Image (cartoon, rainbow, N blue to C red; front, side, top):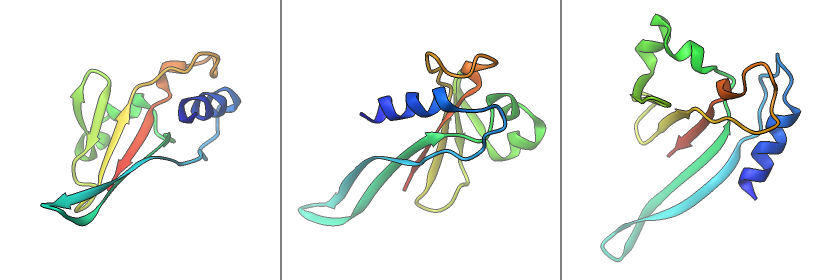
Amino acid sequence: MLAERLVREAKQRQEPDLQHTRFTGCRMDALEGDEISGAVDASVKWSALSLRTMGSPESNQAWRQASASVYVEPEAGLGFMRLMVECAAPGAIDSEPSDLPLQFDVT
């Protein structure tokens, strides 16, 4: 269901569109022994950033390339991590469908 909603949004995307819906991907309890000590939340949305900007000198200070199509913002904050993953959506904007990165926020 989440994938369908993301693809639908990608197909409706317009070139200058910077607003994207954030979807909750999952929530898990964090355990210490038998006790719940917190929760891990993961959300996903199409990023307003492009993968082309990830290679720029300005972005290199904030983002680290973890693999060919995954970037990590290592200093997003204590207990928080942001990932950018290259993802093409069939039927999305024709100009650069692979330049539509998914942004994952994990707390």
